[in-house]
Amino acid sequence: MENLTTTSKSDVENYVNTTAGISNRTRPMRQSYFIPWNNPHNVITKQTSDDILFVLQCVIFPIITLFGSTGNIMSLVILIQKKLRNSTGVILIAITIADLCFLITNMTRKSSCIISLIDEYVEEIYTATIFGPLFFVITSFSRISAWLVVLVSIERVIAVTFPMKIKIWVSKQRMLMAVIVIYILTFIFLSPIAFQYTVGSMFNRRTNTTSYFISTSQFYSSYEDILTIHNEILGTVLFRYLPVFLTMLFNLIIIISLQQRSLRRKGMTTSKTDNKSEDKITRMLLIISAVCLLCTTPGSLLLLVSRFVDGFEFFGKYHNIFVVSSDLSLLLSMINSSVNFIIYMVCNKQFSEAYKKIFCRCGFISTMRKHKPTMTETSKVTTITTVGSTSTHEKISSFVPEETYTCDEKSKDQVRYLPTTEDI
Image 1 (cartoon, helix red, strand yellow):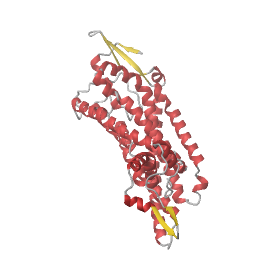
Image 2 (cartoon, helix red, strand yellow):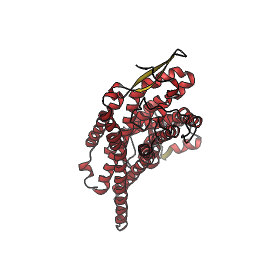
Image 3 (cartoon, helix red, strand yellow):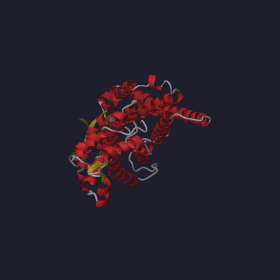
């Protein structure tokens, strides 16, 4: 660990809040630019800022993480079913994995708020130790998700503009390769972030205690100019602004193409069911892209403001409003990673019916077992026909299953069948 003995403790008061102010930034903080948080230039007071951060990090973030993680896990279980593993399904699986990992790793970092309620000293060490590696992982999964939305937009553009070529140009294998490339290249490009931070420590002679905080590493000091270009220019443009721009562009093309197709279809006496199904899938993916744009654009705008407004950064004179804005932007990113399950359930009938087959089947079978047929039901089950002196008993159907299954056994058999009204 790096020891600093030339800086007073008041200069790094509340340094643990660095986890709140850097969620959407990749530029390491400078140790020589500490500014007290209670300065007259702050738009809001430190107390107001702390109160807002406490509600966000200790209350709202855990709730969203629990809800979003549960939805993403259920989405994965449904999407990996055979009927849903097509080219589009491959991308949706990749997005779901990225969103799930983003939520879990982000909450791991933000759990410092909860830890501080138990032991502030442990929270100091925890925050300073995990920040560098987790910041790299969180940023990577967030950027991967953005590029996967671009990929699914490209796939939909091909589907609506070249419907006869979609099965030739877009295959499950090609989409899988594209997903792997996005994952690998993103992790490689952003890997320097993991080595730019270290644990700094400061010994206070008056209290005879050591405090720990996030500090820039020797690696960053050695390559500061290169890393500044990498973080603030290449990283921001390639992984922030470019995905937003491309998603908006491709969605505009999709909307125009859908409108033109709808006008052509009105002039025809018949229309293909396959085209209607494709249009439904396209509209669902448009909603996913629109939600992604709405939730990620504020973070991109926040970066622009921090570039052009002097002092609007963590160690700037507008520190308090900056850390609150950063966490609000992070809140939107978490919402974006949590709502896809709801979109699938509302917009895709096959997905919702697969959910019922997998997660609701056990309760349905349990209800059937408890039900005992009445005399009326029993009379409907058996029809007796008398021909001369011979009577035949023809069994029509039985409300109660003839065979006894365990919940798991019955679910496994039923899961193999999925409705085919729509393909995701």
